Image (cartoon, rainbow over all chains, first blue to last red; front, side, top):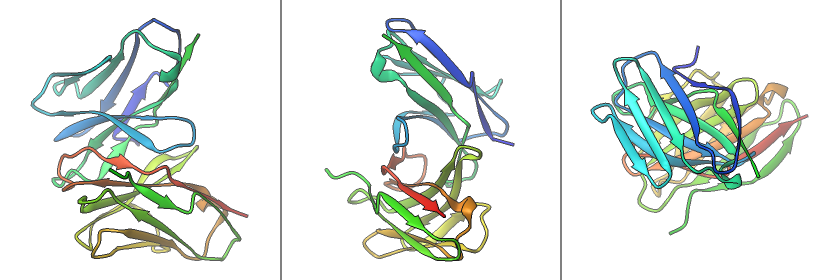
Length: 112
Length: 113
């Protein structure tokens, strides 16, 4: 089964609303990353949060990490139609931090 | 600066053939990883190269192989193609590969017929 699992699988919201996606994982991690993928394209790195961090911000993005619950959340505030994409969390599973395991993703649709 | 470049963008091959995909990382990045993305299995890790050495490998059969050159450019090869190998193959590079964020290329869409 997946190391990281995003929830929900799909989310539809109106422009201007906030979108929250969650990620749960199974084993201890060094860091967790969030990526965005527009349909059929490459992934875009959004945020990396290390295991000793609890919260990070980047523009309209806010990521939290709760290592005791093995979960992370991605909040997109004041969403725009351009935020429509799939969002993935990725966790590292070895000391090099390079064998990242991606979850199945959350498909976000922002309706105008 | 230039991003990660993958070539070709699209490829159609016949079962039993072999294929080579290319990835040029961001200048200065020494770690290159490859992922396969399919609707059914999602993103799956293939392998990672660092300084011309394979450092990590995912759970794929030996038909999938790769290499990295001294300029950090990487290639992956799939021999004896199967229909199930149809996928988007993504390459990602990072500076050191230790807790860095990845920069992904746009991918190569492989269709096996």
